[in-house]
Length: 359
Image (cartoon, rainbow, N blue to C red; front, side):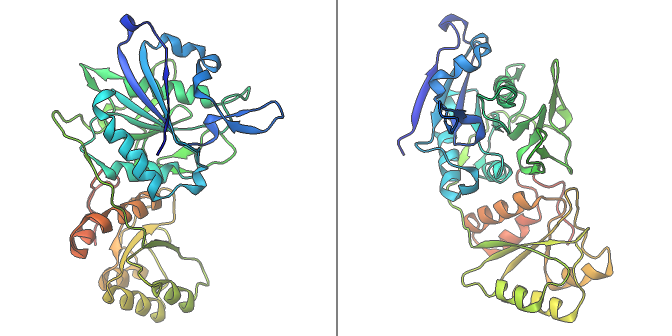
């Protein structure tokens, strides 16, 4: 791809203490109003005019922009491969990375990159905005400036946050624990099942106990194979056997993230259990996750989920749907057997779930 590269002159060379690579994929943050009042992609060569305080950061900042900005609703596997590759290719040249991304699918992208970049020991901070950078009340400036500061932050010469995160509206969240919950307020993201990694106020208050520890000498490994023969199936009162069976009979389908009620509950009608059991015996991998924002699947806790456990439906524990579906896509492409896919789906591989799920 023909990426657009802009190097920002943010400080005198003798004053530069850190380096950050900004990857602009698209989204509201990188938009501005033109003379006619229409939103158009922002020229990052002019970002110092919009945020003059960047010149005091004493950092070497480079912006790599996708050739054509993408609406995050159009994000697909090829974009994840591109994002991860840019970080891998430039990994040794920068102290940290900031990915500017639309909010709608940001949690999916942050989750996927947490799997694709194994051995990551530098910050990768996803951020965006609810209002364009040129808007008077835009949240873009605060989100971008704080994300840059976090991407450069070190303690005793080591990165403070060596993992994939989302920073939005003063909160730093683990990327694969996050979920978009607001479309009209600035506090767009939550992480119900894992503590915030930091909160920005007068200072940035880091929650060190919850941040992935820095591992000395870790070598970054980049994975570029993904398998999208998966689907999310959300249960609802009144769902029919015809709907369930037609989903399970999709040609080539390998995995299903099943969104159930509460702590993993589902209909107890015989037809439902029979459909599930038939699909599992056919080789379909089914992962049970909760529809609740702060939900945790405990299969067998209630009568309605005992049969799910018995027939081989996997428990996703407290994983989010976003982290679950991307994890399934990643594992199906990179593990040698379905048995290993099943084992790793219920085991944390990048901090996306608390502990091995109980099945």
